[in-house]
Amino acid sequence: MPSKRLSVVVTRRLPEPVETRLKELFDVTLRDEDTPMTRAELVAAVQECDVLVPTVTDPIDAGLIGQAGPNLKLIANFGAGFDHIDVQTARSRGILVSNTPGVVTEDTAEIVMALMLGVTRRIQEGLSLMQNGEWQGYAPTALLGTRLGGKRLGILGMGRIGQAVAKRAAAFGMQIHYHNRRRLRPEVEEPLDATYWDSLDQMVARMDIISVNCPSTPSTYHLLNARRLRLLKPSAIMINTSRGEVLDENALTRMLKAGELAGAGLDVYEHGIQGNPELRNMPNVVMLPHMGSATHEGRLEMGEKVIINVKTFADGHRPPDQVVPAML
Image (tube, rainbow, N blue to C red; front, side):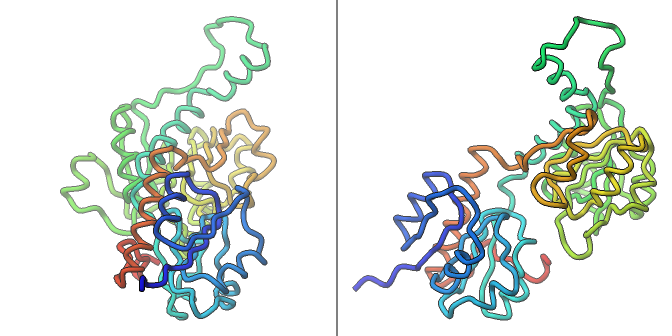
């Protein structure tokens, strides 16, 4: 008799090859609509399944985990970030949590560079002129931006993505600086030609562009708060592709409105998916709809990692990408 296949619930539509392979391996419930599950649907899922495959849009909090049935033993997240999952509560209930690290590194670093160029070269303003038929022709003083070469880039969080950003920025002739919980090993730091700052305050006060690439944890909540943002030069630009909660978005908005900051490029937001409404009307702000990992290649690789994590668990072993306390 074949062993019973794991019951797996997937909360969002995934790339077709990923859904097909999951269906081949497990007893999978797929989502027809590409919309987030309601709270009631999430509760029903965790009460019945062995494995839940959520995404960043699903709040897997203590209240939800507390309603899980006895069969739920793995939350195999589709995505690298896991701040939407109460990992500690899951662990206390004997539920493992896994994620998909590493596969979106290059994609996110590309979006960081796109946002830098978008803000510094005023691409959004130029697009608007063309799309609205308002361009009157070349003028020597029109739409003047700034070049990236020679600018100081301060990277907040020098993990995989931060290092990938550093390599790309160096190719543009930028000077690389960074702040991290721990200084990189010399064999990692030296090829990047990166300058380490133990003091985040001192770093942000001297940079032309700040790129936020650290994870969202209790210790990084509003790490860039109103006080720290005021240390930035008026000519500085803020780029955030990490998590909205790291940056005090309301304080950022006030500074941009007051002309105390040159611009911002955002792919994540602190207050809902739309961000602060006032930001949408600012010509020096480029806003993207959380596109950092949105490539065909990246999403397929994320799905492959989910499959490996669930299959390894089904075979009685620890998922290779299990989230452990040291990561929290």
